[in-house]
Length: 362
Image (cartoon, rainbow, N blue to C red; front, side):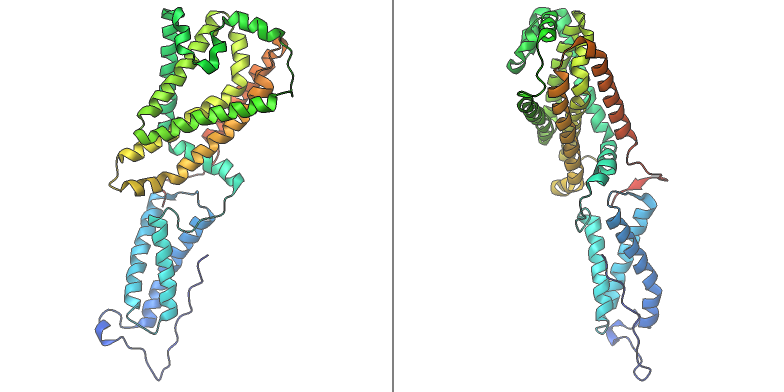
């Protein structure tokens, strides 16, 4: 919190306040100067307090311009006031005000604010996701192109299926109808070993997501390659099951957990592409370190959101997706559709607030 401004100075009538010889012509009446400028000091203090109370809110373009104007004006006031050695309290107040403003302009927010989980979940994460919507679209687009490539390749040469399936997923090399028949006859234990399987799924998917993100430091090339590769694998599996008339099983198997798992991977790719854009530095002349300072909080938010999605997806895949009783297929498909619809609405609508004109974050 900013300290309240000091009271107006009172000077004895027997000793009228006169500017020092070297500053005459700059400030002739100190009391009048402080009274005139105090309104600007209070306005800047109010803007700073608003930013601290609502750190995720974005100032409009006009508000951001006003903030910068006030910062420059009060910096000038501070220089002028330093010529009066007696105004120590007022000078210190302005020094703190200017320092806080500088931090807000150049150090991504100045003092840290308390982490508020509910606010982060309902406002910060979805707002950050939308702010980098182009990167997400490119992520999901690359994945989709890979899926199309995998499906087309398998259609043209079914014998190449084993070439697309990595060793950890060798069970997918089995003919879909045979696997479905075997899975539907298998007894399902809802507890034994499920927690271990769930942890393995979370670990594997988190590795994929983090790898997709960190490869953005290689200018995004390997981020796009990983998205394309994972899309190819999904495309092969989808075409294989559909071609063998196992679409219902496929939907009941993939939708419950895939409705969260795949978006999490896309968000990992989104973060990787944000990093890649920061590496290139398009549209700015800032140094690399300064560019990463600007996107640091957004990257942490995207990774945190993807992590939450993967935790839930791992639990669902372990305790629901692997339950292959045909009579529950409609319920599983419905569950997946509801999840996916809810996620789309959440990311599209949560955290919005009425805004006029352009916005700019400071």
